[in-house]
Length: 356
Ligand code: SF4
Image (cartoon, rainbow, N blue to C red; front, side):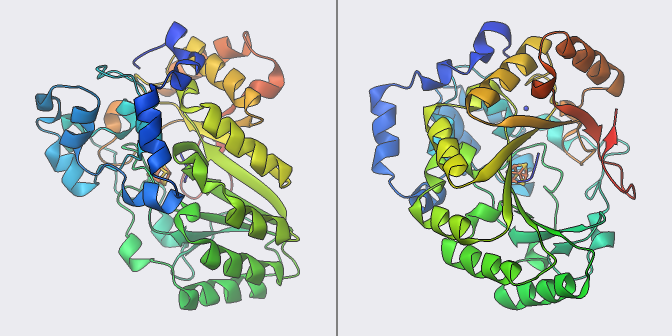
């Protein structure tokens, strides 16, 4: 994941506790979808179905079909049940529902806003920053976030395979400066545990590597992904383990997410979070403060708050820099320093994220 996703509802709605108020009937639906793979394969992939399940008028999606055709809707049940029934402004729904606004061309919004294509020494490998490289580990995500900066990424050209990974591994072995491997995607945890165990074993054998970083949204949208099979290969690696989750709103963190995070921490994983500042989703001090508090309850430290990358189809989520700075200044008055995410922008060609 990622790595980074859409106000709606602020203040009293942003406490994360509503997310646990799931009716027994809806909980049964999830219980019947036992494995994470089953939940992944049964994710909702149709905007009309998404609206129907939430009791919303079908004409809510009028004009949005084109956006769906370009970047399909994908919402797993375990994420859906945290959305408020009958509320088209729900902050989780707004992250995943295509709107007509996606179809309007906006100057400066591009298909590859971070110019990743120019930092790809091997297929599926992105080497932008010193000392660390990013492996596109899986082309799939469990959820499709409408603001995703990789929504136009040519995954078909970078679809990972063992042969492709071998080429990437050669690049890592040959560069003694690289000490950190980042698994990204898509969502790296959408790959099977067999594939991931193999890949991590290869990374273990590269002496200069110290850290394994995994950018993922799967433990949030399908908490059952953190199962025994995953914990086995995570526990086995000699590398220090960091997982960067992607959570934009406190309502995303229910008890299942907290349990998944506890299992990861027991396995020695450091948990961080990065969010995207999104218009009408988390663009208020109260919502951002509630998010940081809820993250800490789940054992996750706030890391980055990204301003939106200017990706084509996502301009309606943008919060101007001046407003973002003011929000963060007011947030600082509310939170202890260790709960403050760093407000950053990613600028193509820069050696690191740029603080705002
Ligand atoms: S669509 Fe996938 S890669 Fe993009 S932000 Fe969402 S989870 Fe991350």
